Amino acid sequence: MKQGDVILKGANALDILQRRAAILIGHPRGGTIAVALQAVIGRRVHLILPVGLEKRISGNLDEIASRLNASDASGPRLLPVPSEIFTEIEAISTLSGATAELVASGGVCGAEGSVRLAISGGTAKESYAKGIIAPLLNESSFELI
Image (cartoon, rainbow, N blue to C red; front, side, top):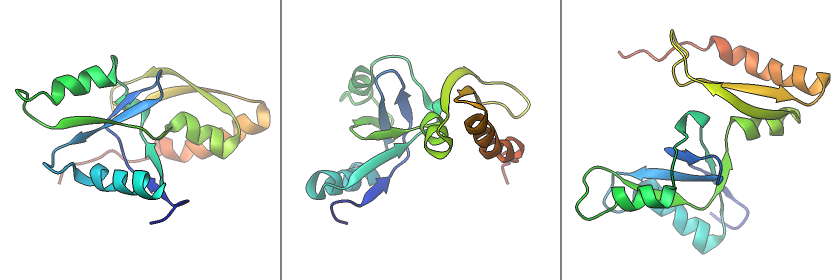
C-alpha cells in the first residue's frame, strides 16, 4: 500500500455528534485495525470507516474505551480510531447530492436496527436518493442456518 490508497474498515461504535468511531478488538495483537493503522500512519494511506447509524452510542468514546480496556476488565477492547466516518448520511449525500438527517430508528417485524432518514435537497435529488434506497427496503432478513 502507498500514499493515496484507501482502506475501508468496519466499526462497532459511532459517536455521531463528535464524528468519531471505535472498533472492538478481540485479538491480543490488535486485530486487523492494528495492521491497517501501520499503513495509515507509516504510508499515509487514507482510512475510511463505513459504519451504520445503528451503531450509535451515547457517551464519550475515550471514557468507554478506558473502562473496556482497564487491566481488570474482561472481553474485547475498544479502540477509538482517527479516520473519516462514512454513514448512510454521507452515502446519500455522495450518491445523490441530497441532504439526509437521522430522525428515528428501530422497529419490529424486520425493522430492528433500521434507521429513518429525512431527505431534502429539491425534487430531482430527493427522487434520485429515493431511487437508490427503494431496492434496499425489500432486502431479505438474515436467517441462521
